[in-house]
Amino acid sequence: MKPNPVNDKSYQFSVRIINLYKFLKSNKHEYVLSKQILRCGTSVGANIEEALGGISKKDFIAKLHISFKEARETHYWLRLLKDTEYIDDKMFESLILDCEEILKLLSKIIETSKSNLSQDK
Image 1 (cartoon, helix red, strand yellow):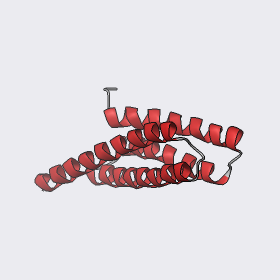
Image 2 (cartoon, rainbow, N blue to C red):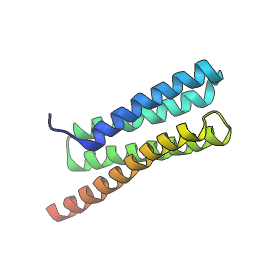
Image 3 (cartoon, rainbow, N blue to C red):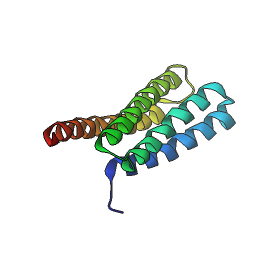
Image 4 (cartoon, rainbow, N blue to C red):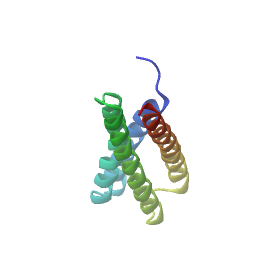
């Protein structure tokens, strides 16, 4: 399989989100917000993986849209965790930068894929 930057970055982001979830549960005894960020944060990569196996270009784009929405939701929960002092500034900055990088990549891929789709017609 050839390298895929957004797939690789989203997988590594998922690993970080799982570690954040474990930290929030064990160190902060936080069980509700931690599950929210776990669900959406790992869903980003899962939907990218699904997109790569899509049955059509439209399916590929649709799955990437879902991934983009999940990344936006993750962005929200990260901000909330920081502002409620569950995570410190250093942890927040590192995670939010990764999330924003994935959002930019997804946005560009979706835009390019839509453009290519309309040119194929």
